Image (cartoon, rainbow, N blue to C red; front, side):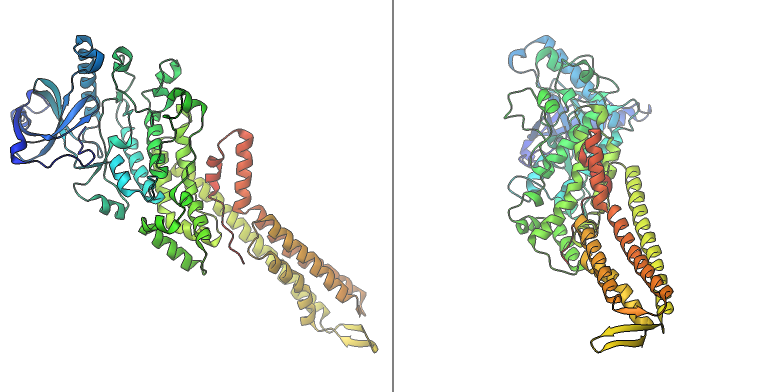
Length: 583
C-alpha cells in the first residue's frame, strides 16, 4: 500500500537513506526488447528511507527514490507472526497471497485513481512490489481533520462529494476485463492524494483526488481457491466494520460464492459513506456478542443521523462548512423572510434526508439487492449538484429536485414531477377560463335587469348593475383561496378553502334573497352561474392537493409498506417533503 499514513512518518533525511537492490526484478507488462534494460535499471537500485514506513496489509510499505528522483513505494512481505511463525506452510501461503496481490494490482494499474504498479522483485531477501508513492493522507485521517462536530461527522455536502468520488473509483473497476473487486474498501485504504492540491483546496473545489490502495484482499474474476484465514488464521481479508455479510462467514455457501462480485465493494463503500456522514460505521460490532455476520443479516444499519440533525448548536456546525452557510444565507434571502434556527435546521435536514435513499440500499444483506456503483455515483452527483438550489426550495415550501439511484431513475422522477406540475397548471388554466367566462356572461346578462329590493321604507325598483353581480359571484372564490393560503398541499388547507367557498356561496345566496328579479330566467341563470363559479374555483384546489409532492410521497410510502420495500427508496423518487412556510 502506497501511503503516508496518519501523518506520523518522518521527512527523509540524508542520513536515513540506504541503498537497496531489487533482485530478480520483473516488469508487470511485456516490454519491447530495446526497452527492457533501461526499465530494469530504473527500478533495480533504490534509496530507501526506513523512517518512512508503515504496515499495509500483508507487508510493510517504505518510501524510496530512484536515480531519476521518482518517489516510489516498496512493499515488502512481512514474515508470519504468532503461532504460525516459522511454519513453512504458512510462509508459502503468505507468498502465494502476495503474488495474488501483485496480479490484482496489475489489473488496475494505470486506471485513474489507482497507484501505478512498476514491477516486483526481492528486497532484503523478501518478496517486494515496486509502485507509485501516493503523497497524501488516508481518508480516515482526513475525516478527522474535516469533522464539523465532536462525533466525527463531516458536512453532509463534503461527505457526499467524497462518497461520490469513491463510488466513481468502484465504477471504473467494473470496467476491468474479467471482473475485479477490492474487497477491503475502508477509510484506511482510501488515500486523498495531495500532490497537486492540498486537502483544503480540494474541499473548497468540491472534487477529491482519491486513490484506492492495498490490494491484499482483491479478487480477480472469481474467488480464490485458498484463503490464509481458513488455513492459518492469519489476519487477512475484509475489515468487519465495513465488510458485507458474505465476507464474514464460511458457513453459508451462497454468501461465499458471492465474495468476488462488485456488490462487495458497493456495501463497503456505503459503510465508508455512513462513517463520513455520522462519524460511525453502520453497525456497532464491538458491543454485540453475536458474530458480525449475524449482526449484519439480522439487524438494520444505524439511522443516518447527519451533522445538521444531530447538532445542539447549528451555528457551530455551519461555521465548519462555509459553503453550506453561504448557500443557506442566499436561500433565506431568496425566500423573502428571516426563518429562525429551527426553520433553517428543518430545511437542511430535508435536503440531507435524500442521502438515506442513496446509501441505505447499498447496505442490503443480499448482494443482488444492492445497486451498482455507477448508479450510486450518479445519485450522489445529482445530490451535490442540487444541494444549494434544494435548500432554497425547502425554505420556500417547494418540492425538492430528486436525488435517486442512477441517472435513468432521476430522469423518470423528473418527468413524473414535471408531468404533475403541467397537469396542475392545465387544470388551473382551464378552470380559470371557465370561471372568468361564467362571471363575464352573468354580469352581461344581469346588467340593467329590473329588480325589486326590500328596504326598510318598503319595496324599491332598481336596475341591477353588472359589476355588482360580478363582484358577488367572485366573492366565494376570493374567500376560499384566502382561507386556504399557501397550504394547498395539506388536507386541512383544502378543507379550509372548501368550507370558506361553501360559506361564502350561502351568504351570496342569502344576499340574493332580498332582491326580486323581474325575470325568472335571469334569476335561474344567476343561480347556475354561482354554482359554476364555485365548481370552477374548487376543482383546481382539489387537483393541486391530489397531485402535490406531499401526497405523492405519502402514496409512495403506502406502496413501500404494501410491497415490503424500504420507504426511503420510494420517498427519494418524489423528493423530500416540502416545508410549508407560515402565511
